[in-house]
Amino acid sequence: MAERLSGHTLLVSLIATPIRHSLSPKMHNEAYAKLGLDYAYLAFEVGQEELADAVQGIRALGIRGSNVSMPNKQAIIPLLDEIDPVVELTGAVNTVVNVDGTGHLKGYCTDGTGAVRALAAEGVEVKDQIITIAGAGGAGSAIEAQLAIDGAKEIRIFNIDDRCWQNAVDMAEKINAKTSAKATVHHLENTEEFYASIAESSIYIDATGVGMKPLQDQKLINDPAVIRDDLVVFDVVYSPAETELLKFAREHGAKKAINGIGMMLYQGAEAFKLHTGHDMPVDYIRDTFFSDAN
Ligand code: NAD
Image (cartoon, rainbow, N blue to C red; front, side, top):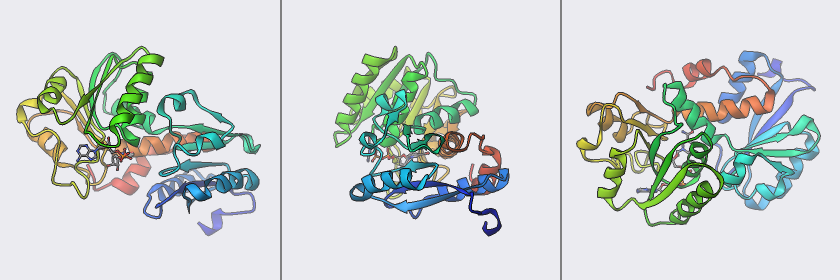
């Protein structure tokens, strides 16, 4: 690292809190080193109180761009100069580009594209598909918006009756108003309706985090009859690499049971491209950080 850094090194930041656990700095710095790019990527503990100053700091210091995570993904939008059209739908930014280092900050959301690219990498296309998705939090909303933009036919959003229920309602309204996809919202507590929807879908996405600590022993599908060999099961959780849902889906014959590692890699790769103009060496990064995961 030391011999890579110089007076010319361009900085990319990550602003969120808590953020010290994030894998992003390792992934991006490893990719810069692999490609010999004169960039460095650092995480900064930034919450909503510090956000305006941090954004001004990006401009003042000529930081080349930033990734943004919770709690700043929505709050950063009014502080930017421009947003990508996708952000109007997602209502969240996870990547900021300091355009040509001029201080003009443009916000993007690569979480949804990361998910769709991860599916495409497994040979799964979302266009014209009926898709059932559980969850309408940060990850779910970004994926739902991107599915609509990428031409899914129907997006059936299931959520429990919690703080994210209204997110689901709002997202469906936006999708129906702004895209050709049809979005509907349903109660996840209604298991019969949930299973019936999956039966009509080619892809089921779990964007709830059920299957990850502290819910690592749980899954939302508990009836083997729901799993078909041609049902694509995609779980956004990347740790553990095999959630209870993916294990259950594989055991009951699903040919494609996909974890969140690809989404994680590709959302990073999209941001990497926006920040540097170069393609992230995705396979190398996967081998470096996830070699023992499946
Ligand atoms: P969030 O808190 O914004 O949303 C959580 C969603 O799950 C909400 O819709 C909520 O209603 C639902 N939910 C919560 N508990 C539930 C339960 N017991 N049963 C059913 N539904 C429940 O969280 P988020 O930021 O959207 O993250 C969700 C998951 O996605 C996490 O596991 C996170 O690690 C993962 N994630 C993965 C990637 C990736 O790149 N693979 C990216 C972002 C998030």
